[in-house]
Image (cartoon, rainbow, N blue to C red; front, side, top):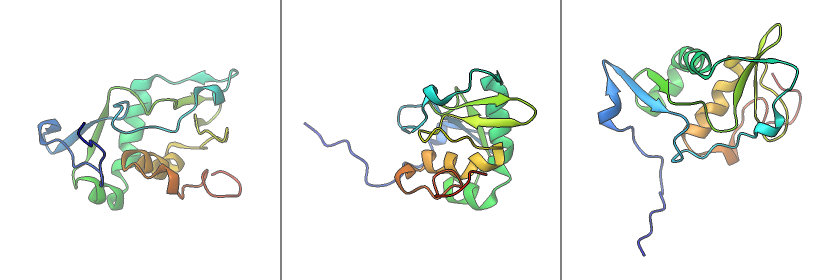
Length: 136
């Protein structure tokens, strides 16, 4: 049986590159998510996945350091958010799904964790929620 394990993060598929943007499906099983739907709040309004993906793309593409690490092209997220993650609205938008049960208090705060999902480095993620201390 062939060993299909990867030793490095896969490069973007050139077929998914579109008009200077790279289309990226966050729900693809190639990129295992640590999201946990059981941590979602029951008393908040869920924002549509389409809107969540648009806001994620806007925030991610503002991080030139991450864009250059990934493919160098702005990303257009498509499909669904990472499995187990969703965006909720109270008075502010908060991202829920982290296995710790803690929330990301903004899309901006979720971007570092999102990048760790994309690069398959969740185990060593240093985002505000994965680090000890209060979430941001």
